[in-house]
Image 1 (cartoon, rainbow, N blue to C red):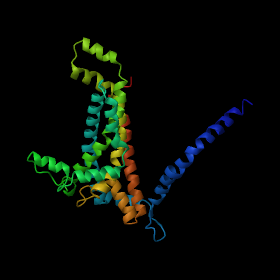
Image 2 (image 1 turned 90 degrees about the horizontal axis):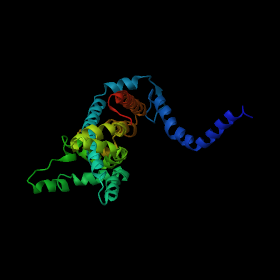
Image 3 (image 1 turned 45 degrees about the horizontal axis):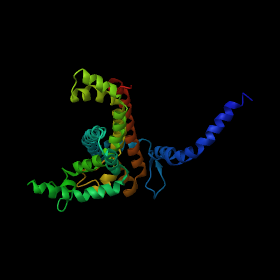
Length: 293
């Protein structure tokens, strides 16, 4: 009987995990394996697929449009990541105070996070409309001529960055607020007795003890940033003149506009390799600055 407990326990655990494993295999692991196989083929959905080996990957790495999309994606990350982190941290610090109605403000700030990206992108496309948008109308009141925003190649990506940061501020705020509330108040009281000011307490206590929450936020937001797509597709469609074309937009266009399934799959795996490398580097570097209390 004792010897049967191990296999029996494993079978019981497997049965309980089965409802979750089946959709995971069908809709995540299965498509990933299929994509890896398709990346080695030349297939346009009309003719039989033809094996080409790593030719698709070689073409991707030589493709100037893919290189431009990588550059636009990195530009998006460089603008979006600092903006959403500092904004979320500022909101978290404010809402961590004992203010009346703070729970209401938390809900208000988090509401965009659960709102559909299509809705948010359409709203921001209207707000940043160069002719009839509220933003340019507000700037005109102060005598400032508003830019062309999503219609201008130089302002298309900043428009997407602004909309993306606004939508995700609530997510960053919630994570960092939880981290702030986990910091013992004794540290602040001891620092105040020693004569530390607000900035000193924030720099020497808050930021170091918030590093684990900050690390989680940076990893998640960076992974999501590399996969930016919805707001680009709705607000600019990769334009004007390809100024806001990003990697996932290129993948979707190659797959569903040009029917180049093998080429699109190869692009997907190149993007996966980049995200994996960046994530591994983050986990390696966390030892230098993340404090786990």
